[in-house]
Amino acid sequence: MSAAPEPAIGPVGAAGASMAAQVVYEHVSPTRAAVRRFLRHRLAIIGVVIVSTILLMAIVAPLLSPWAPNWIDFDTGSRQPPSAAHFLGTDVSGRDIWARVLYGGRTSMIVGFGAVSLYLLIGTLLGLLAGFYGGLIDQVIMRFTDTILAIPPLLLIIVFVSVAGPSIRSVIIVIALLGWPVTCRLVRGQLLVMREAEFITAARVVGVSDRSILLRHMLPNILGPITVVATFGVATAVLLESALSFLGLGVRMPEASWGNLITEATSPVVLNQLWWQWMPAAAAITLTVLGVNFIGDGLRDAIDPKTSKRG
Amino acid sequence: MGAYVLRRLFISIPVLLGITLIGFVALKLSPGDPLVVSVNPEVLANLASNPEILEQERKRLGFDQPIFPNQYFRWLGNALQGDLGYSITSKRSIVHEIGSRLPQTLYLMLTSLALAILIGIPIGILTAVKQYSKTDYALNALAIFFASTPVFVLGLIGIYVFAVNLRLLPTSEIHTVGRTDILDALHHLILPASVLAIVQAAPLIRYTRASMLDVLHSDYVTTAHSKGLANRVVIIRHALRNGLIPIITIIAWLAPEAVAGAVITEQIFAWGGIGQLAVKAAGARDPSLMMGIILLTGTAVLIVNIIADVAYAVADPRVRYVRGT
Image 1 (cartoon, rainbow over the protein chains, first blue to last red):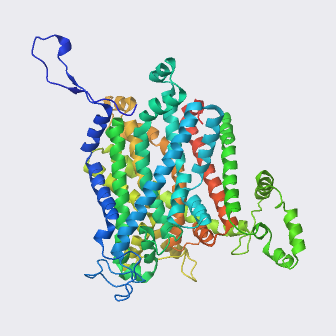
Image 2 (cartoon, rainbow over the protein chains, first blue to last red; image 1 turned 180 degrees about the vertical axis):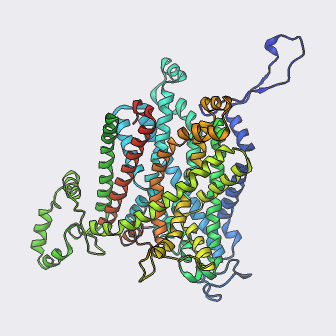
């Protein structure tokens, strides 16, 4: 389902040998073939390098900056230009911006991976139920996904985060509770096709239980597409978190987030003269999302080779 | 065709109910006295001195009954009659609050959508026709780049470059105070509309490219080529017609994204539309206002989708016979 094996035509055998022996297939498992295709995808590798660098910087943030992100440096003062002590200067309250960019990366990564793992769980579960059982369960779940998909996600998230009280935790939970419909639709769609497949019929005939068919026969086959959706989901979640925090409705000061670092730029002075206060965070978001999107493109092409021919 | 439209409308009913349910949940999750958000503040001010009358009023409005289904259906009935309650911050009715700002938002969104289509579709076609060329790679890279940049960063960079450094365009508001001429309005529209257009054009380019490539690789296009028709004729007369049909659906898919973009763009450019209202409502935790905006945008997106589906069925009769969900 997820990837076709890639037969490699080996060297033609000695002349005069029997016809059947002349074409030698190297056996490559679908997964290995996909991994090979991914490694050949130049942009995807660039994406992996970008994202792992940013991830690493977020993890070892304390080693890269002598300052704590919320520490107010009264000696240096507020809105200072870059210096030896403060790599990117200080913000309006005298906090080190370089440290805040690093720790903001942590926020973005936690929200990105946290929210997506949560909604993958919800979406996969509901998608499996809808696709496997069909009927009324399917109808109810699908109308529910349609409803959530009809309302602009940013608005819905803004509303529910404000009700829950803005914080990293509510941002993650709200994105997770509203982000699952895409995964759910995908899983359901794949299952509807697979339900009719011969290997499933075969499994039924030999008496495999529903649970086992779902989890051991069907689920492994849709892991590929789920990975692709998850990757693009991380990009979207990072963008959503930064937008919410930018609007002052997500991660709030003094907690560092790329979005709320950029909020500073809504003050004309910062926007016009103090570019180092907001441009690094802006570049960080764009780079991260770009990197994740590259990886997503690469994964999609690797898992479904047909798309790579088309773009 | 009529049957198709009816079926399409019919399956939208549960979704519409779902949207009202989510709006209602948003309203009920917010703390505070339900009287404040449902009674005209002027009337309430007169009643406020007398706790007994307030209690009667609560009873009259059914706030002592179970939230679901009693309160929900009562609220739904009022909503269908255009009574969405009152804003706790401005004390005005929700319908008035939203209605007075809707034109600004539509003005911004429709202009940017038109711009996005004008930029996105031709570029998408160009990249498909010149697949694997340097133009293709460059434009595609640009599209991915813009799709990865947050709207607010684009907006701020736009202001930084065009308003602050080049001093070509104004930074915010719909028009200069005291001026109402069209030239001034257009001048103010350029930056926000372009930012919003770029955000929508980026995915449009990629989808148009994919859709055109599908068609360009199909047999009938090969046939047209082998008949000896000029490349231009094949693309314009044969491929475009089918290649652009899926774009109808894609424009509808972009609607929720466009709303999200408008929320942020309006905030940056102090545009004074629904988007800015939404941020204000969430910041002040104004429940009825948030509920009203959810209802409005949800319904609008639903209608856009229905129109797109019907338009698709007109353009491609095959879908009328496929049982879709």
